[in-house]
Amino acid sequence: MSKVHSSWPRTIAAHTILLGYVVLALFPVVLIVINAFKSRRAIFNDPLALPTRDTFDTIGFTTVLEQGDFLLYFQNSLIVTVASLFFVLLFGAMAAFALAEYRFRGNLLMGLFLALGIMIPIRLGTVAILDIMVTFNLVNTLTALILVYTAQGLPLAVFILTEFMRQVSDDLKNAGRIDGLSEYRIFFTLALPLVRPAMATVGVFTMIPIWNDLWFPLILAPSEATKTLTLGSQIFLGQYVTNWNAVLAALTLAILPVVILYLIFSRQLIRGITSGAVK
Amino acid sequence: MTGQTPAATENVVKPTHQKKPFRWHIIMFLAPAVLVYSAIMIFPLFATLNLSLFNLTEEKQRIFVGLGNFAELFGDPYLSSSFWNAAGNNLWFFVVHMLVQNPIGIALAAILSSPRLRFASFYRTAIFIPAILSFVIVGFVWKLILSPLWGVAPSIMDALHLGAWFKPWLGLERSALTTLALISVWQFVGIPMMLIYAALLAIPDEVLEAAEMDGLTGTSQFWKIKLPLILPSIGIISILTFVGNFNAFDLIYVTQGALAGPNFSTDILGSFLFRTFFGFQLQLGDAHMGATVATVMFGIILAGVSVYLFAIQTRLRRYQF
Image (cartoon, rainbow over all chains, first blue to last red; front, side, top):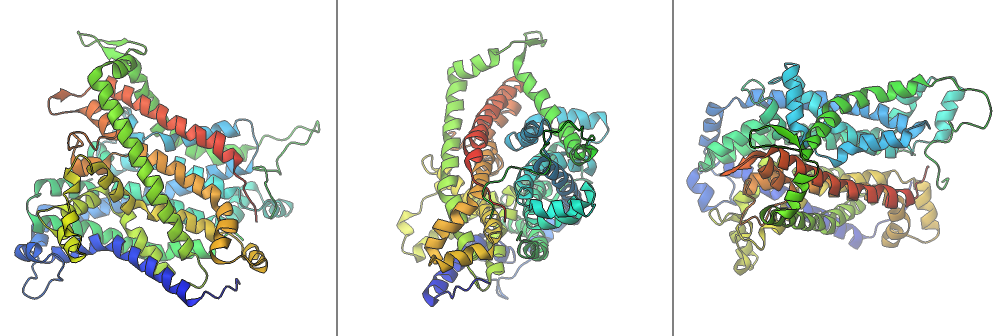
């Protein structure tokens, strides 16, 4: 273990800076959530106060829940995000391993080909993507979204994971080969566990744009049965823009599930980052 | 620590005349990713980019016009001034991210990774929360906070005796773009923080102990030992920032609408593309000119990434532990 005994002033400075930044990061979110539980008058009179017994009001939530099926939207978002994430991480790690591990003709070219996708927004191909989905009868299905998001997430996953796969010790892999492990076993049992921190990081970065995307749900799956949470709340906010109670309540309903999901998931994430550090 | 190593050493074919068996596993590893990616991303992209070489005649016939659309984009006074305005704004948007977001992210990661820091996971979790929110939420939340109508920002600034400095920043031509860039920085600072944090954790204790033996601790240890070791990660976040910023669109669209007001002062390439492609108000959408703008954006991003891949990445030293 490292034996630095942090001095007190240094520790206090570190906590002050971090705490300050936490306040900056969380203040807007907290502000929205506390005001969502207040009456319209209290929202304007004293936006920074916590709701009290006098000012407590859930009229916003009533309006929101009467107007849209937020539970269904949430379920759709969850299915799309989890399925895409699974495919991106599995396919991405496999391709990254091939690129980092083997010398073969066209390796560099294949790496550049797969990295192209980081540079160009997949949105530029929307017209042709819509054509494909119409041809295969996938419009207004969650499958269409999962396919698009898998393709969208792969380039970045391959790019980052290749960088990390290169750091996996060659000695370890060669020891595995001498012990007669197949290349598949080496990938699944040696390389994959060692890049777990990178996988967790890539997972979070892949998940966020998928969960938050507005564009493809709007174009590929706008039907009531397949609406995602982001699309549902965008439409709602547009319609109720002057109803502050409803807007704040809708924002709260859009924020809370993601934050709760993230808090549950982040324990896994942090364990992944700290325990699997490549050493 | 074994200095710089080539990507893979074990499979280098030795100059013998023995023929190696075909390595099917390479294809098996690559196939799923390459297939999905080619079919859903690359093919549609090039089908769309191909459109930039075509245009419609008076009779709505699609004809090949070569580089005619590009000549129009850069020759037409209205189109070209809109394009250069958007490109300039986009560059500023990127500069703000590089100067504010990435240094803050690195600094937070460095503080977080200091040994025996208590509550580190709480801080890390909390600071990352804005990054998981959608543009729809972030855009709306900041619009509400900065709105003079609600008065949250003015009253907080009053409390800090800065009340006189408040302005409706999002509504002013001079400050709207920088305000939006800072909102975006607020949202995404957790991403460089997490990447750098993972890189810092991967530095082995032995290296740091050796540094301590030589009397390097604290800040000087960061500059002389850790920073050189995390340079590849800093390279990655820089290029990701570049690509992300030159693809940005959602935040502008959600807060300022497709017109990127006030008076196009927040117009960036993404919103310019959207207007050209889908039209707005009285202007009709033009798929061919949209594809042309998309092709130019592609060129800009390709140039930036090539500089990184060929000039920077190849010079970075990588270490295996």
